[in-house]
Length: 322
Image (cartoon, rainbow, N blue to C red; front, top):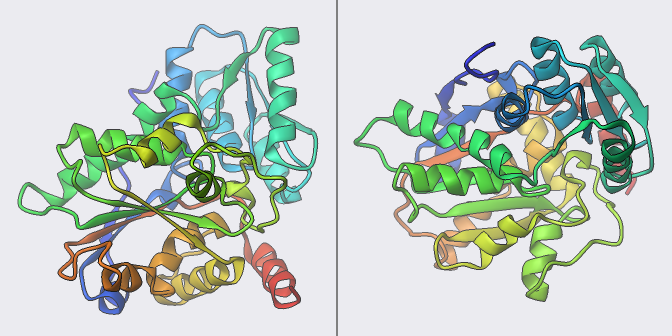
């Protein structure tokens, strides 16, 4: 079996984004992973540890499912992917093309996850957690190790920009920063309004569950953030700055990124990019929450399976009429 299922993704310098924020911006191109997003790092690592399984089940808004389908096909083990009805139809088709069995259950990811956990009990399948598992976080931590190796020993980051759905990637990034001795590097954790379970929890001072997912960034659509991500955000161990942008700002970021960098990413990734395009970073500097003289920014371009030209057109129409 392969040593791991993910690839060492390109680290690209963006002249256009660097100009916008006045410091060097590096893009970690997780959209180029074989499954289309960073998820293959953690899910690949988790599945390897469960390699004796007779079959897997994974609940997903799209990206975790694509990663699980890719990894299990390579392993030669069957997988059932449970997706909510909010997942675009072409994503279900892509999952089936990878050889996965696809079931559509419920309206949001939480509904699909309840069905996945039921199948673990009734069918004896191994559960592939989309984000809330220590092995997932360990797998995701490799994104920071790679970036540090690419940058070399003389470059230290000013901040890491990342989207938060359930918080799995955030936990992996904290672990990665710990591994390379960069725990003083702040993380800017981006969410969209209506899928902002981390931000809502931080405001409440405790973990809260959103009533519903009203954002179009369906890949960020966990109603409850994982406990570990919340604990990191509350601790003095690492600086996590939680910021929320609108769907319109995320869409604008997607379109600008497509124009400037010639790469199409989904709404969840647009939330990260909006930290630059909607001037969140300069505002945080003005507020004294980031240094005025900021070191290089690492933008995790998390990618995404839930986008194509038609879906972009649908999003534009939906958000123009909102």
